[in-house]
Length: 295
Image 1 (cartoon, one colour):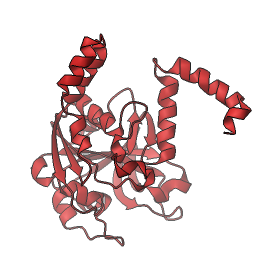
Image 2: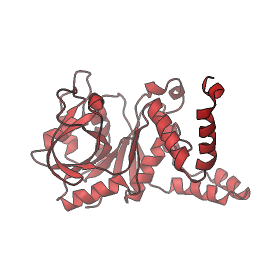
Image 3: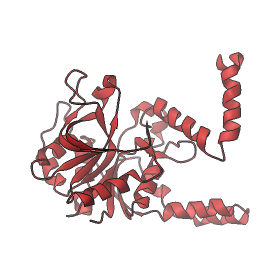
């Protein structure tokens, strides 16, 4: 099976990052020097996906613009001897073909995915949620495609263990038989209470889905807030299309919150070769400087 298309919803209002998101889409706020959307498209490209569909809303024009060529800037960098930087700019534009579809009203994740129905067509596809930054040696979505291939085209969702006190913030998986990192999904529950949660394995922003999900979304009943949940649509398909959960290796950050963004930036600062020496030196001095910490 070849997965050539990925859907990435980016239409959220980004209220947790106000006032910055008055002018900057949340997915464009950089984690050090790359916005979350860059990490997603880069991961998709590493998996062989060559067509990315952004589901956007008003004020999100900078998202697709980020992936367009900037010959003037490339030339300026090259003329200044910054050839590696010029090449990195060209690589951004070459990651994937970009399409845009507009979500006029934010009616839930399921509704956002539904907006891409015509562009996806009748083939399986990937979904990325850019609030979920995953740092892994291998492409998580590529691993999920391989799992789907090995299991007759099953749908696959990424899972991660969370603290039982955090389950009410996630879609949570009800699991069947498990083999190493892969489990049968018996159902999904959106933001359950700690007491009613079927497990502590949360759905983490990566999906391989059948095109039949679109009909399931169309037939879904909106929840209490009028939102159409993707988890409900997936659950409704389970009798006809198996779904597997994949507990991926790697590190996950929720960069949809300011604290999560700070954690991700701190991790990258402490581990990236061109940053870690100077940053670690500063961090050590900060930890030991009482006056600096009190400012």
